Structure formats: structure tokens, C-alpha cells
Amino acid sequence: MINKYEFSKGTLAIVPNDGNTSLVLEDNDKYIISVKPFQIMEDSCRYFGSSYEGRKEGSKSILGAEYKVPIVVEDSSNLIAFPTTSPYADDCIWISLKRVYNIYKVDNYNTKIIFDNQEEIIIPCSFRSIENQMSRASRLDLVLNNRKNS
Image (cartoon, rainbow, N blue to C red; front, side):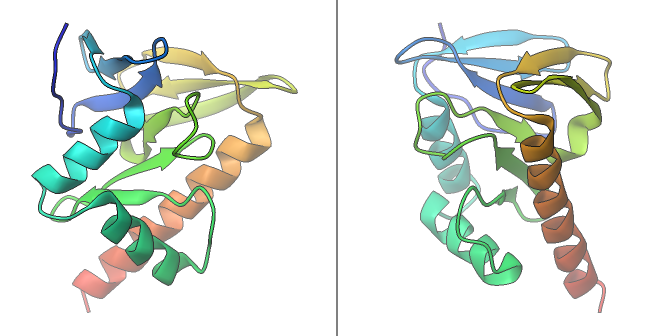
């Protein structure tokens, strides 16, 4: 079991594993990390020179949204992750926006996410909710890209 992990371009998703650990899905690997998903996100933001709260406030300011805002984990590559529920909830899954290839409705309560490497997971979240979260994260990405290029 690994004690520390930073969100990276290879990260697909960070999934709660049990009460105190996380399952990290990467391109060709899976890791059990000895902290909760929120702690990984907080540590990742700090690793890249900010805080989770700072990243969250920046996203809220850009999007005008209050809840479940996506965050820019790392600036130079616009590495953006979005939560499936309240980021502080024990069942929150973090998804890497740029790694999502497609999403499908499984039923009213579950959505299948297919990543760009053909890995897939079914998450306990409605299709509409995931679609909304992806839309927010994509809008954040677009605004930041436009600002960088203007």
C-alpha cells in the first residue's frame, strides 16, 4: 500500500476503497493509497503549488458555481478533475476530465465511464449528474485556455 500519491496526466480516477483508503486507476495500473480521495486531491494541489481551497475558490469564481466544482489540479497542462458528489463525502469519486472518452447511462443511479485507454468503471452516480459535472469541467478548461491564449 502506498502512502502518498499525486494526481497526474496518467490518472483516470480516484475511487474510495473503504473507509480510509483509495483505489487509484491509472493508464495501466491500479494502486491502493492509504488515504481518502479528498486527501489525495488536497495533497496534489499542494504538490503543484496551491491549496485545494484556493483551487476551489478559483473555479467558483470562473464558473459562478457553488457546489461540486471541478478543480485545476495543475496549471500548465490544465489538469482538471471533477467530483461525483460533495468532495468531502466519503463516497466521492474524482474523475480526470481529459481522460474521459465517453459516458453511458446504466440505469437511473449508475453511469459507465469509458476512459481514453478503454478502461471503464461503473460509478454510483446518475448520467445527468456526470454530464453536468463534465460540462462544468469542460467550461472551466475552455475559459482557462482562452485566457492563456489571449
